[in-house]
Image (cartoon, rainbow, N blue to C red; front, side):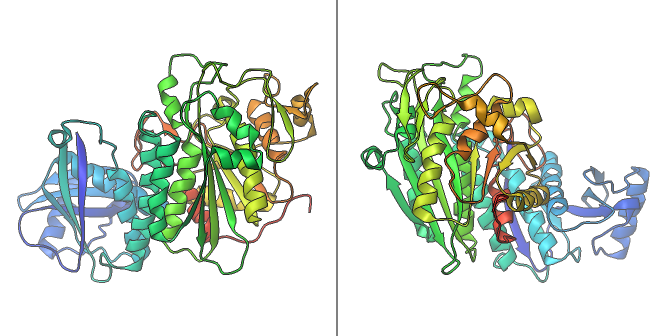
Length: 488
């Protein structure tokens, strides 16, 4: 049963019956400010229950006075991941009780820690239920009051976390949507209202892309009855500086095309637009948080379908850059979309750096499992910033190699390159392919094939669409420092 969150920040504890939420540090040190008698009862019951405050653990005490929910914080409770995880644990523990109301008294926490607890609770409370016809009967709502004399709903940090969560929720929603509901034109329609946040939205249709010579992107979509699009979302928050560019693969459904995928598991290919979802969610969060930088997000939106007009193995297409590509496998389509999206972004917006995200290769999951996204780059500076941001947000990345030996696998006898290499190192040759469409800009490619969709839930991430990339990119942008290419 899904549990919805009704969260209130208040300066004083409410009256009436409610459960009590207590954060407990290591060795049983009680964090909240409780009256003497209640504190003594909690400490006694906690000792009996052998609850030591280990991080991530929770327990319920049924005292005469009230029900008490204990959530362990370990040695310390810092802002960021520790606080977010604690927020997720609070929501899970209170939700499991099925109580109508719970109150977390003033713990004397720093404003940033409390704000991150709020974010963790919101991330944990997310669920996608729009297609249940009896959703109301399968839901419970838990009201949680956080008591703080210094932080209310209008506090800038709370507003910041709300905007960040809105971006994460947008990305998750987009990934969860079935392909008959979220196709390229509908994706465009979901982007347009973001102009209300101050984003400049521009859309290229097929005729406009054809004029620009985007044969690689258009070739992918030619087997679908749905038109293809390219969307740019521009946030101008940083004066005259060159923007940071984010580029996303948006294959709204990927059958593999003529190189048809196996039927088993194909339903999950609705999430093959996870890169575009991450970029869209990030741009929503950037605008909602009024970030003081220039950021542009570009997404290529297509469907890869088999049809009498579909692209065939052996076809040769010409990308916007003028380079020709022999299409050996139509299921290696995401790189074709990104080839034109990357070139367009670099030439149109002249960014100081480009980061693309894509559910690009199954080989990435073979290499790294579902614990890390693969990172490929021409800039160690950029990799360092992405790695730090990934650690800070628990959206980790791992740098992978690139080099001339891998590029050799892309040689074609009839065109400038093939769209696939040999049977080994598939994620690397895919990255090398993309590198050919980046001329002079510091660039990183994040292969999020193992991270956009999860087979199991965690304390703050649902089973299914994860929203991976939004918090990573926002953290990177927040702490941004200029970068250069390794060959400069």
